Image 1 (spheres, rainbow, N blue to C red):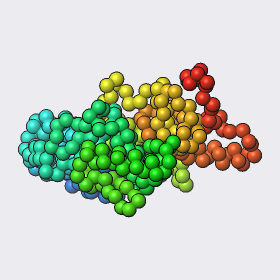
Image 2 (image 1 turned 90 degrees about the horizontal axis):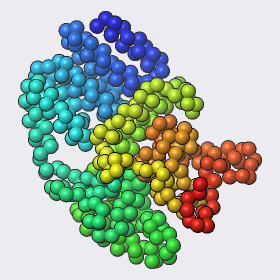
Image 3 (image 1 turned 90 degrees about the vertical axis):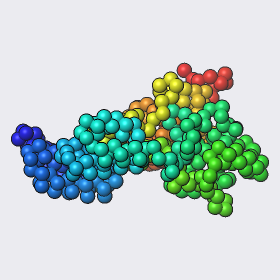
Image 4 (image 1 turned 135 degrees about the horizontal axis):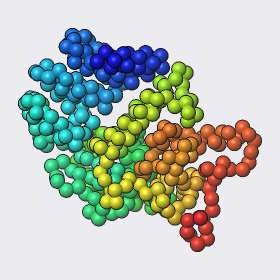
Length: 381
């Protein structure tokens, strides 16, 4: 135990020098567990309160739930069960029912009856259920109190489904105009015709979603965040936390060089991806998220193309299936950040255009050079 404490203390010193507050708080949780094992309960509680303040300020919910659950199990008894339940509440906020279910056996073995009652009440009570929209593994909608989700051929029209996907991407943090939505869905039609088509697609989509889900504010449309639960948005929230970790890795910013990545940011990226797979992902029939040989995205506007598409029809930029910076495969449709190196795809476009202008060159940047489609409409070799 003394060796473990020395290791934790040395790790804390390093993280403190790096200014990695969230990771520092996570390791503090390990120190609190060591004090519990040494029967120094008061010191362990003090450390716990200190790290909870840091993690709550950073909104690091995965670390919060993990530490509270582990601390509650190590402490045991009525007091330990209270910490354990606090951890379960955070898992519920993260929409992680699978993890809670896996903890049920642990609750039974430890005699955590209040925790079991809490889980039964929260997971089986439908009164506060939200509309569940699943983007990963195929777009689907599950209405409250209904067992079967609306998927595939159950949609009234293909355009209504595409409209929902656009709303998920474009209205996560803002409103979007009807004209923009119509121009994305019917780029070849006149403005009058595309807006008329949009009204029909909206009617079909409202029939699927029901309730007060789509908010109309004059020319603007948005999704009512209070009435829906979206796995795509949850994952984006985790990705942004990862970005915060990355930027805190070195004083004055972070290095773009692969060998200079802060260790804690790399670890958090792994945890984010693991959490995504274990909690938010509805597996696709073939067991993959996105077949990189068949799907391509625009690094600027996130347009999703197929194997036969070479160029984004909106930006004129060559579609990609690998990260331009590190070569990692793009695992999900509409991805905005690389899961491995953390680069934002749209920023790479801006950066390379800027580099080209500074160099005074006139040749398009190779990675984003819009290639001509082959005459036989087949993918270039």
